[in-house]
Structure formats: structure tokens, C-alpha cells
Length: 140
Image (tube, rainbow, N blue to C red; front, side):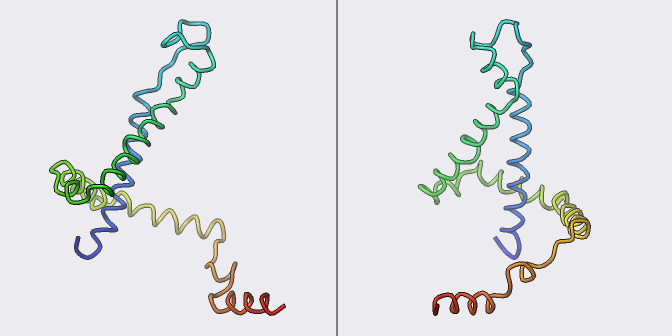
């Protein structure tokens, strides 16, 4: 990674994960009305949970996010030398390069003005002020 490629990869990766979550949740959701025959013969309450698509989102979180992290931390060289990972890294960089993610900064600026957000120092003080207040608390 050179320059801001790591940041671009992380932004693109998050967009890809979000897209996967929506697609899998949509693919795994079903619409079985109460009183109809349920999938796997489960109760109506469990079938209503299946209808939401949350089960697919949960599976995507586990398989699509957590499992990859465990493999990458256990076998980093083998993980990064995989052709599939090279393809995924390039896909993430292409998503970020497309500019889709940059639109969020414009929305954030508008939201900041509307909501009246200010810098953190206004709410919690500067680092020096917090250290001074903490030292005064310890002296008491």
C-alpha cells in the first residue's frame, strides 16, 4: 500500500461488506404468512424471525467478516498471497475510487450544520484542560 491506499481499501471494504449484508439479507428473507406451512416446520414466531432476513445478516456477519479476520490473523502470509484476496483488495480499491464513498463527506457537512455539531474540545475540553482537571481531582 502506498499513500492513502490503506484508507481507500478500508473504505471500499466497508462498502463491500455493507452491500453483501443487504444482498444476503434480501436473498435469505422469505415471506410466509402466519397460518401457512412454515419452513422446516417451525413455530410462527420463529418463522416471523426468518421472514425479517436477520438470520442471513447474522450468518453474513459471522462468515463474511469474523471468519476472514481469524484466518488473516492466524496465517497472514498465506492469506495475503491468495489470488482471491488480491481480487478482493482491488475490488475494494475500485469501489473507493468510484467516488461513491466521497459523497458521504458532503452529507456529513450538511448534517453538521443542521444538527449544530461542534469540535470535541467544546464538549470535553482540550487535552491540557482535561489533564489539569484530573490532577485537581487527585489532589483532593
